[in-house]
Amino acid sequence: MGKTRDTMKGKDYRKALEPLQEELNVMHRWLQHTGQRLLVVFEGRDTAGKGGAINAISECLNPRACRVVALSKPTEKERTQWYFQRYVEHLPSAGEIVLFDRSWYNRAGVEKVMGFCNDAEYASFLEDCPKFERMLVNSGILLFKYWFGCDQKEQEQRLAERLNDPIKRWKISPIDLAARERYADYTVARDRMLEATDLPEAPWTLVDMNDQKRGRLNTIRHLLDHLPDHEVAMDPLELPPLSKRAARESYPRGVNRVKAVY
Image: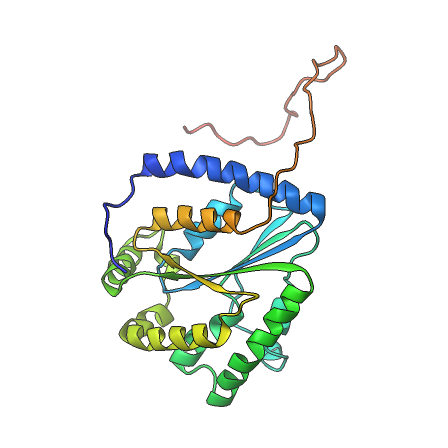
């Protein structure tokens, strides 16, 4: 990887993003019209930009039918369940989009590298995951898997930015800091994961996120280009004039209001 061009400017990014978000809405209408189910898995390096890409997709869509799933560490009860069980309940229904901000691939990444699973659990995952994903695809789910990468130098800069920015401070955890010295170990784990789970029915797509804005745009373009033709006419709607009986807004008396500060 590595930056080969200047970082994309915000105004250029917003100009390129708008038509993609319009097409995302067309695609979403197609899903709802046909009852198709779309599942997108986002994995990758810490700070690579998974959250920003997910937000670029979800912010323009109906939140009732586009869900972001970002699970915390498993509970004691969940640790006793079939490994994939807690993810299954979040799978999409007809007309829905589900975006996994990390997924069952935690076992092939952070759990393996940081020692949160044993060798037998890891080996079992690599064997079972292709079977699980083939079941998803055979059931009719449209499954996409993206792995976001960035160079170690870029990762270090972003970690430092998060550490010093009170708004982004929540994005960094002790695990993230402990993982810094294991960049190469994560590379080995990634390559082993790709080797075992890059399936014809559910292939991995690698995204260069050294420039996050370009990476988001390229991800959305790839997703849209690899779905079936999804043009569905929008239902015609009109905004008729208000009748004389239409009520006008009046604030109730005796109720506190937000103070106008700005």
